[in-house]
Image (cartoon, rainbow, N blue to C red; front, side, top):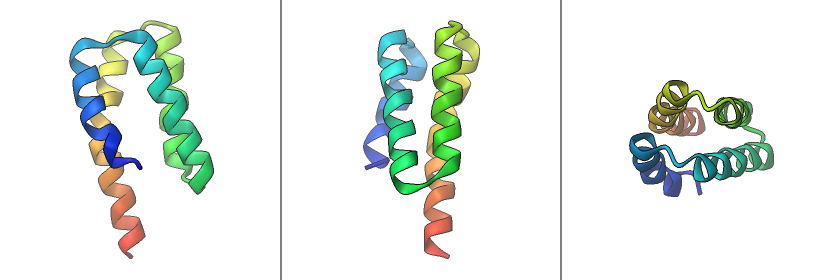
Length: 79
């Protein structure tokens, strides 16, 4: 479920469509809540907050961090 957002994050980090980024943030937050992944909830919250402030630099950074976040979660699940 999280993997499908990987390519979306990469594309959005280049174009930064605010409405789409905000929708992604909400979607990731919901997934985090569903599976009780606090790091996903926090990431989604921060992305939504930065989107509401139009902080394009921070939005880009957060979107580029997403693949690492997924890798970290996979590592935790494997252990």
